[in-house]
Image 1 (cartoon, rainbow over the protein chains, first blue to last red):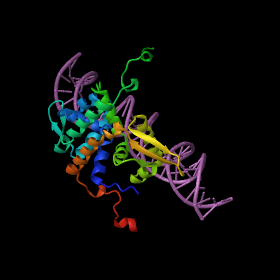
Image 2: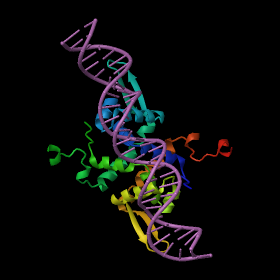
Image 3: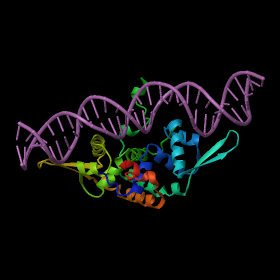
Image 4: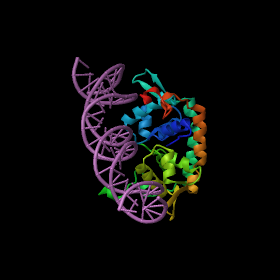
Length: 117
Length: 117
DNA sequence: CTAACAAGTTACTTAATGTAATCAAATTTA
DNA sequence: TAAATTTGATTACATTAAGTAACTTGTTAG
């Protein structure tokens, strides 16, 4: 009978627990970024980055500013709502450094013998 | 070139941003729970709950205790690693109450006229 | 014997994600 | 003038993850 005692918390959880959303917000906590900056900062595809940014814009977590230079420059930045997530990500950083231990499988681009066969 | 500057943070994000994982941990922060308790506390299927609990057990975030009563009772609880996520969820609760505003679509089981046709 | 309960598992459908090619606009370059 | 670049996307298609419902195992109550 899933009571979901708090719909606000549920919605926040839905937002955060959508793939890539957290990493995108974390990137923008370091200041405004352009599409290609975010794309090259994590292994996300253009398709999903575009989709996620649109969702975050609709939630008023991210703002999209168009600079009609040449070539056009579009900057993504956090709104107040987005910036307010800063402490949460600081907390996740803290937890990860205290409790996560890495094994070989956690190094995403490890160069091992097999790669050079 | 996704540098992923911190593999520990990346892994923490992967854990948290997997569907249901956050809600399961949040449930267990209120004390040990059995399979059917968790299942009925959120709209997750037995299939996925079983899968997620196994993953969390492997990450040593959740502990599984078997009580050979009749019928058998199995209790899931948080380890120290899991309990250490408490502040993070407190922070998410805080953020959600400050910034999330609900519209009709966010009430999961709203009873509207159409349901009674 | 039949039903019920807890904690799953299996088979199958649907939705989300990954991959790669392509697009439009405005220049630069050849 | 035609081809090539650059940015911020979008489309088509393959793969993976998630949702749904029926079934399993072991035990006990009726």
